[in-house]
Image (cartoon, rainbow, N blue to C red):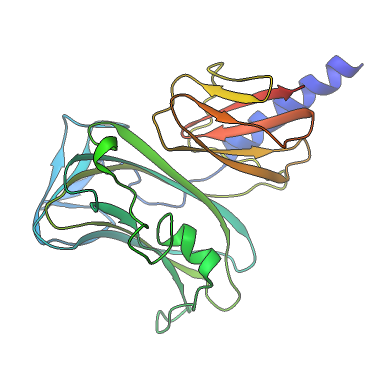
Length: 262
């Protein structure tokens, strides 16, 4: 009976994951008109182009070669009080270590006013470290590989519009791809693609994900869908020290898996 219950739970989780609707339009930057990705707003200092050689998902990405601050953004209407998960992929080809960051905020329904963020919110909506010199997604040692950034947030009251924006800075060459914004299900389990991989597993108090690049964010949920812990994977692993024994769902990058912590 226990095996049947677990099988039903994992099947149910898979259905929830696959049922998520991506709210980003043209999320993998496949469709372009007159040199601009459809449904996106861009500000370019330098050059921006559709690229088909350095791609994370689909057949193209957006390549920025910046001589000043450049941005790629989209305004998305959400539901106040609901929780969403946002993720995207980026590839830094050149720069000085201060090359790229997320720069997002919430706005009123008439787009006239931005939400005044707390420091904690700024840490995730404007890059690791918030609005500081440590908030960049990049560092010299992470160049030349695709990386992902993923955050979960609750939409503040009276500010239902997400101003989703990523920035490329002076002297940097950055590729952007595979944006995903999904509403968390009632079980709190979401995923960009619904892909499941056996590359995610736990041994002792260590989480292993062989397909992850350094800096991949892993979000752990318990079996009732509550978010338990957020980890950063480096060299294919992350510490589970302090985590109670039990079964967990883990979302890392573009994959999900099940781990048993003993």
